[in-house]
Image 1 (spheres, rainbow, N blue to C red):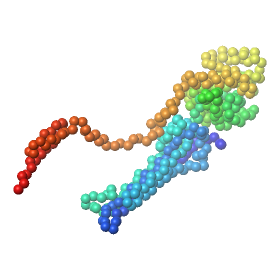
Image 2: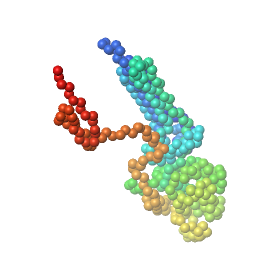
Image 3: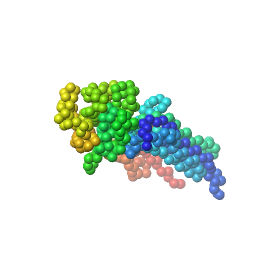
Image 4: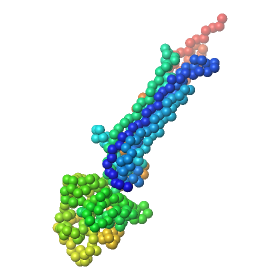
Amino acid sequence: MKFVDEARILVEGGKGGNGCISFLRLKYMPFGGPDGGDGGEGGSVWAVAEPNLNTLADFRYTRKFRAQNGANGQGSNCTGASGADLDIRMPLGTRIFDAQTDELIGELVHPGQRIKLAQGGHRGLGNPHFKSSVNRTPYKATKGGEGESRELRLELSLMADVGLLGLPNAGKSTLLAAVSAARPKIADYPFTTLYPQPGVVALGVARSFTMVDIPGLIEGAAQGAGLGIRFLKHLQRTRLLLHLVDVLPPDGADIVANIRAINAELEAFSAELAKKEQWLVFNKIDLMPEAEVRALIEKTLRRLRWKGRWFAISAATGRGCSELCEAAMTWIETHVQPAPADAAPTAAAVPAPLRRRAVAPRRTEDPAEVSNKDPGSAVTRGTRQRRPAAPKRPRD
């Protein structure tokens, strides 16, 4: 399926059902009064976070979503059925904006999280609601309200634990294919990867993390050069960055200059992204003698004054990949707090509670007690005071 990370959709809540005008008519009750039922509430439209999706491609073909209308009320005080809500499944990491005001409506970050996108219309009222002391036969009912309609803009930023970055042909896709079940396209020319490729790295029972590969970065990516400007945002949600370095660049470029160029692009795109934990991963060590690889890495680290962690691997042969993944898993377990299973959605994910009029509770403690010991008086006990009982009138 083609990767799509931006889309526009139109959502509409269902229309509320109309109220009914009806009167009770029985054989021995010709004027029974109004008995028209209310209409049903219109269905609402919800966005639901689906962890098994990683693209917005479905919204390229279906762009209009409308919830079910409420049914009309009927006689005998029968209320119409409420319209069913419409759930729209979206990938984790989807941000939802109002297309007209550019206001952020919500963000799907928890599996199963729900965000209301459009409110259904209110139900119409039947004619019993308009009965009064001066109008015993009201020929009046209200129509159901229209559902809310909104045009929305969707932006997807993949949620992954580990992000791969580096120059084109650094071996990112090869590493992803070696440690996960993902099968990205691999070839010996630049920009083989055109879209972000996620994968799951499983290290054992209940020990796994997600890894995402983005297209290679080049100098000027933050300003739109290459494909980086479009996909750098998919690294913003990652927790750990693996910077892959080709120890034998095909163009003979300086390794240190390449590393600094990538980090400069990260800084230009987002200062927060540049501050993320980053490890250097020297790839393709199988193409050089071990002594030369060791000397090259030591020289590179010394010139960069690198204080972080680094690894030497060969994604093609699998050498060092297990140690790298185990270290990444340990770091994630140590530095990332696991989300609770019953994590509550964000404030924007649930509708505001209805405001109801406060009703004072009825007092039950220390009730007043009345004892009619004397026909002409009353004895009260407790806090409630009652009017004294009137004396009984003597019979004639």
